[in-house]
Length: 179
Length: 268
Image 1 (cartoon, rainbow over the protein chains, first blue to last red):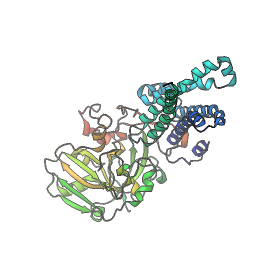
Image 2: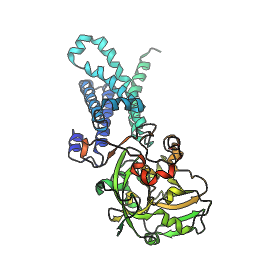
Image 3: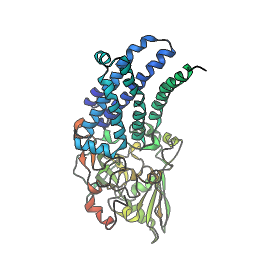
Image 4: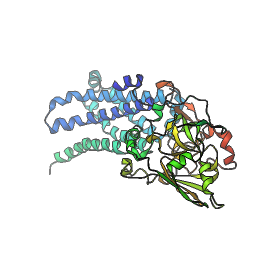
C-alpha cells in the first residue's frame, strides 16, 4: 500500500509508472517465495501453526500479481487491448508473465472454503500442485526482463530461494522412500 | 556556466524542459551502478579536476587538452535537446557546450579519417560499477565522421545553466540528440579519429540489439520491445500517455540527409 500512496504523492522518483509496476512485481515474487516457504519452515522447525498463513500469503500473492498486471496494462499500455496483445506477441517475457498469472488464476479462484468442499480435498490438493510450476514461469519472466542490463542479482536471489523451497520438497520425497 | 542561445538549426526545442531534479536523479551511468538512482549517489566521488582529453588518431595535430583549455576552446551555447533513451523514456534537457566539430577541426583530421571513437573514464578506484561485468570497460562509443562533424553533435560541459553534475557525465560528454541516449558517452578521456568503424561497448555486448548507428527510429523495434512510443519523464504524473516516438527523435530535417540511400532497417 505504501507503493500506491507513494505513486500518488510523487515519491517514486522520475518515472513513477515504472517504479510502481516494478515495485508491485517485486512484492508478487516475494509473496510467492513466502507462500512456498511455509511448508518447509513448518515441517523443518516443527511449527504447525504456520499453516494458517499459507492461504493468506497465497491470496496476497495473487492480489499483488493482479495489481502488477493492472499497473502494466493501464500505465504502460493505456488499457489498449490491441496494444497489450501486440506486446504479448512481441515480448516473450510479457508472455511468460501472463502465463504465470494464468496459472495463479485457478488457484485464487478455488481458495475459498466452499471451493475446497465442492472440489473435495483430494482434487483441490491436486489442482493446487500447479503452484510448483509458477516459480519457473515467474523467474523466467524476471530474468528475461533484466536481460537488457544483465543485472541478474535480484532474479538470482529469488531463484535461489525457490530452488531451496522446491528442492526441499524433492529431498523429502526421496528421503521418505524405503532403502 | 555562461552561454548564449545556440543559432544552430534545430538546436533549441520549444518543449518544456524536464525538471532538473528528474534529469539529475534518473540516470544510466553503469560505471556508478545499474539502478537509475545509483549514479546520483555514487558519482559524487568522481574527481573531475585535473582532467585531460587525448585527441589523436588520423589527424595532423594530435594533442592532449586540459579541461580548462576545452572550456575556452569555443563560445558556449545553450541547446535544448530531446533525449530519447533506448529503454523507451525521454527527457528535454538544456545542455551547454559547443559543436564537437570545433574541437575536431583543431586537430585537423586527415583524409583517412572516417570514424570517431570515444573512450570514457574507467577507474576502478572511483567507479564502483566497474566491478560488475555488464560491459567490457572502458565504455566506448563511435560515430561516423560526418555524424561527428554535424553541427547538432554537441560536446557538453553543462546543463541547466551549471557545470554538468557528475552523474550526468562531468566534466564533459557527448550529446547526439538524434540517436539513442547511450550513444552520448559520458566523462570522455579520449577521442580518436579512425579509418575503420570502431568497436562500441553495446554493439560488442549485444550486436543483435544495439547497432553501431542506433538512430532513434520508431519503425525499427528493439528485439525485445517496441520503439514506437516513449514515456516523457515528469509529464503529467502517473497516468500520462506515452507519446509517439519521432523519426531521428524529431531531427530528421537536420540529419536525414546523412543517411540517404542507407537501409535503416539493416543498419539500425
